[in-house]
Image (cartoon, rainbow, N blue to C red):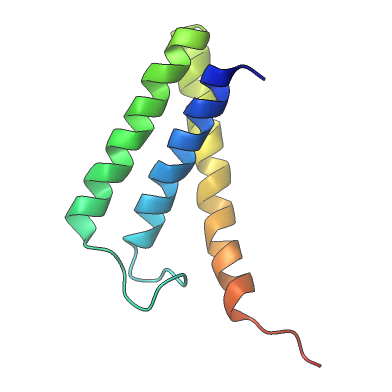
Length: 90
């Protein structure tokens, strides 16, 4: 895995976390992050991810890679929140 791909996926993951933590239904923190600031930071991180990945592959492939990774992250983040809150019965 190239360093640019890894950096891009980390930036996209951080952007998705910022977008998720701005949601009023997030389960990671007691209160959501300020909505405007978190949306701006998340969008900038996703665009940065796209720019970095465009240096490693063709732009169309970079767009689809970032979108696919964002979809995966935005599905997994709420599941992680549920798993953190749910305690196993003992």
